[in-house]
Image (cartoon, rainbow, N blue to C red; front, top):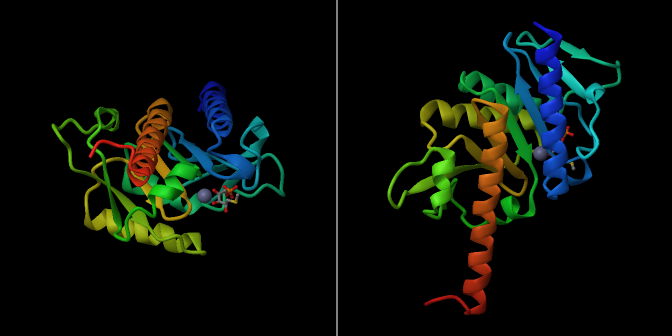
Length: 214
Ligand SMILES: CSC[C@@H](O)[C@@H](O)C(=O)COP(=O)(O)O
Ligand SMILES: [Zn+2]
């Protein structure tokens, strides 16, 4: 694989992490980003790094057989690598997987006790691939187990049994994860989801203060 492909992937991850960090979605080292490479390995953020100022040495390359490539021995892959791994296994078209912790994603994850969140039928859903009039679009919600492997197992079980409507999921009280067939599309998906969550939180605030249309 050419050095160029490797470098491009890291540059995209660094730029995207900086942008998400600046929007308050990856504060205090939260979140993790990965890009898949043509040989089915993927670069993922190393655990515990500040996402606003990542360096090319702040990533770990994870191979399908579990072998790790890293700049220094003390570097660990993201604690949530198992979730990225299961997404890449379940969705062969996925080339990037992004996970962030925004305030709004946590708030909306409590809007229902069910394991699916109904999204409002906004035009923005088209950006997630939903081309329907008045779409009835659900975002799956998973429990936030302490053991990440349990979250990954739940994702594998649910997504093996049921097809996904949109390429994203929520972990309750934790954050949102989206994947796509290119790093640019995955970044757009996260931005669109955040727009939808912001809309939902704002709508609820307006309703609760009684200032919205009845
Ligand atoms: C701010 S702690 C957040 C972590 O527990 C985790 O949820 C997270 O998203 C980042 O973990 P990381 O191991 O740095 O990839
Ligand atoms: Zn997380």
